[in-house]
Image (cartoon, rainbow, N blue to C red; front, top):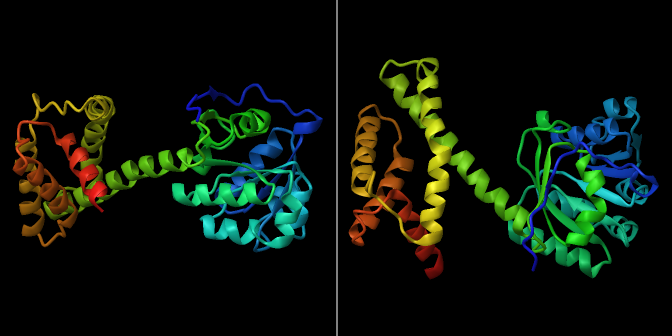
Length: 311
């Protein structure tokens, strides 16, 4: 499978006759943002949502409303789907009338879910004559249609290139991660893991700070300083994981265990749940117990991989 990645901006858009129409299924906040960006780019945009009423502003802006999902997908060669999860997407796309209308057409599924669900959807699409690309949106609704939007795509490279002009109308950067259909969802899950783990840590830090009489706004600028340390560490640790070096020269995991223990003790002295940090400390102590006390914290990655391999 190809793993070629291509990045592009939304500045060079084509709206020729074969690329001038698109359908959007799902009009939650993100779906409405996607449809709005397509309209702003001059594309003939058909919209549909299971619950009526969310399309009013889009219709006022020039979109065409469809009375059914089947009629919506029949209006365009390309359908963009963005709903809450793949259960919702399957409920729409696998309706027999919609499936029949999609034959020979392309679906770009920007719904977030797991890599296996993306692979299952691609298999379903292939069995029913539907051309399929999977994707992920890595930025908030406010970025859609602007240079700050970030989209990831996976699936057949030729199909991606064919519909790239319409996708670029959504703004920002678009990266094709390869033909293996689950890659976009895999990146999405891994990156959201970083985000939500960080948010959990920040929420815990704010609770601890408040317990010690520090307001959240007092802590925030210093927390931003901690955040600024992370990007170069991400790259350094990625090299360690890929090379298997796990250098702990600057900060061995034994030192990390000590600071984690302090956090747990301080949290629990205030009655604050420290289960997330206790779990992290437990992983670090297991690494030390395996004889890797001189390595860096990211050696935990290898421990987690071993656990997964045994399950």
